Length: 112
Length: 113
Image 1 (tube, rainbow over the protein chains, first blue to last red):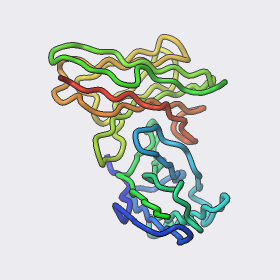
Image 2: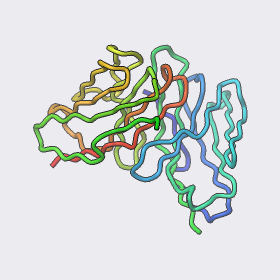
Image 3: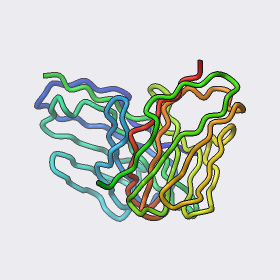
Image 4: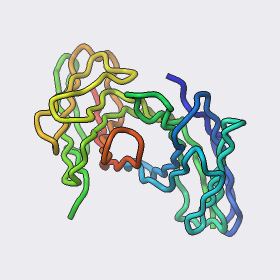
């Protein structure tokens, strides 16, 4: 199946800086979701953006979606050490009977 | 205390043995999923079930089997036919189908000795 691709694979920043990670996908979608995974743990849902939405905010998170370019970005503002984790995008393809398709993730390291 | 649980957290298996991973949810979700995660990789779908007594193969179903006899339970059996079973296994559930948020369990790390 066609996965989303996150970019960059790894990102290292200082506390207080902003972190931006990108996701590209190949098929038309119903929605795109971002998840977070701390090392050795399960994934936690962060935000869902529908195909007819262009931008969504949740606390320090800002997600954009450009369906014409088949891409999304996740911005974390004023990063904290506790934001250190892997971040995955997941696309919900516009096809009946399919499940979410996860990308390989971006590993974010925030140092204090 | 609602949520999705997986057990055990760590599991060791000898080559040639079948082993079953447990996944239980009390969220009253219809859909449940099993994913495999290898180091530094994303999630790959093994099986999913959108309703009791029905399930579909995902991208990497070979060597795995599942059952969905109860709404709250979706056990995964890793059979001896799975050639490289050492991985981190994640179970998830969602209210209906794949359209919305998935809620994940804490995972089971399986190691084949």
